[in-house]
Amino acid sequence: MTRHVAISADDHLQEPVRLWQERLPRSLVQRGPRLIELDNGGHAFQIGDTEPKPLDILVAAGQTIEQKREQVPARWENVRSGFWEPEARLADMDLDGVWASVMYPNMMLDVMMNQVDVDPEAKLPIIEVYNDHMSEFCSVDPNRLIGYGLVPTQSAEQAVAELERVRKLDHVPGMLLPVQPDVSDWIDPIWEPMWAAAEALGFILSVHAGKPRWMPRRSELAKMDHGMAIYIHTGYTSIIEALTHIFWSGCFDRHPGLRVISVEGDIGWIPHWKERADRVFSKFAVDQGFSTHPHEWFGRNFLATFEADPIGIRLLDVIGDDVLMWASDYPHSASSFPDSVNHIQKHFGHLPEATRRKLTWDTAAALYDITPPTA
Image 1: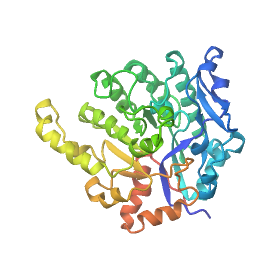
Image 2: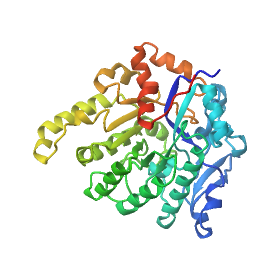
Image 3: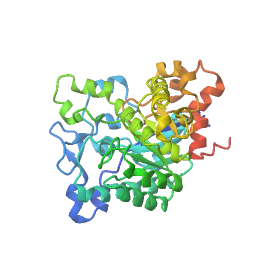
Image 4: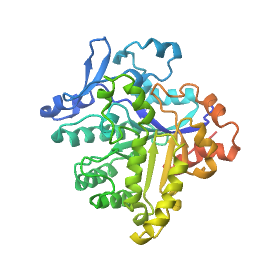
């Protein structure tokens, strides 16, 4: 019998290779995502005429260290079926001891991380196709497959309309925001209708780490000496930028039921950011009409996922153990799959059982209303 020990609060769903070719209007197909052949023999996704994104580390979960070091270009025909097929995904979860998987995009993550430009006319239809597919994928087992849709941000009205459309679909409890919207930034009052709609419709919102506002795109960094090291080292600061804009927009003050999750941005920065928010509040926010304190938002309005962050765990008493949710990051190269049971024991085995269970199960189960296995 499978021993399920955790809920993964951040995984990814690899989009099927012909999803947009089959579903976009014919006039938009060449402006949408499609699989292309690379000169090195590997495959990549390309959106319009943007820089291709090789499959490689996006589909490397379960490989040995030796296989990863070989860096053999990934091809679609070799991609593990659990990365994109629901029944196989559930089997991989059983293999890994993971009861439920919260899923974000894989190839489309570049759009939400502001790594590529998308034709303005094609962007909303591309997102709609993705959101429909996520709903269909999760319908196979909506208690264990937890899907996030994508929020379009060419206007607040567009964002609200898609929130309302996706709410009519089943099995999509969360919506992913880009690290920076297409128009202005998250602190701008123009986004108030979106915050209000998300709260009213019961959506959980997330921001996934991506490109900081100051940083060149990954395709440019890849051409620089050590450019990718800079990206991997500092990319998480995009989360800090985005969430700071969101915090000081006052949306949590006006909408106490609104929840926003930091995804794949680690957690060691949270204690200092939390303390600094308190200082900013005490000096400036009292005169700006805030009725609640930032301390109240942690665990109520703001949560964060992480894979393994020893510094963050050491500062757990400052962060608050009700803020954090463990993640496998399947099917990326950094994923703990298929050894998540031992990964959890290694990183959290020293914690009290109640704390460990909060991080790996209870908080995510309550947030997404996940029913545990009967046995």
